[in-house]
Image (cartoon, rainbow, N blue to C red):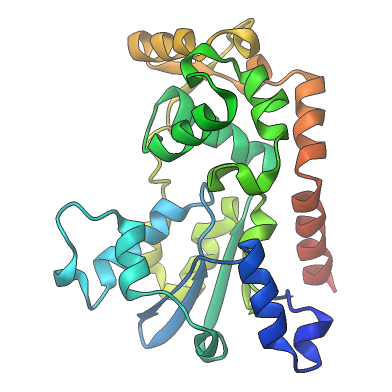
Length: 267
């Protein structure tokens, strides 16, 4: 359990805190779905098993017949499953899934910049901020230049996990690597096996190989290697010690949040 409410919430001034958070874009995407007579609330964080949750929402939604042919899953969820303030107190489970920040960025980079899977928004954001196409940049440029800009200007895929949380009490705080085991207790073994046993992301099973110099190669060259041979650079090939430290410093707020999660769980 994790209580993300502020003192302002706790002294009865929640509307003031909510107004401030909305201006900052804090905790926008929360969705609710009834599963096995339990109301599940879900904090949507990109690259944290969100594809698995989207599949479950689409399949189990009572409004699935209303889905438009060209509608993205997230847009369908926004039309039919968005949570309102009153919903948070009604949930049997309020779920947030977290992930090591560096692992999250590595997964995002492979999926959006090498495999180019659902990457239109982040590519558009990259071009708008950097004035160049991603294929002409390197992983080092991505870390040292693009990611160093004001988070409020960056695509949501690379914003800190902490900005996705609402001022609420999360009953289920789950590391992504333990998601399947935890969800057995939430939705039962059958649904947990169907939606959470294996990652949905198309790059989750890609072979990662030693790829000297990958951090400084244009992304187009890495894409070509992936297209021809079906593999991608491993973490050691992309992450020098200095780049890892840069990412850890950039996402210090998330490391602090995760330490808070673990600290409260151990009490």
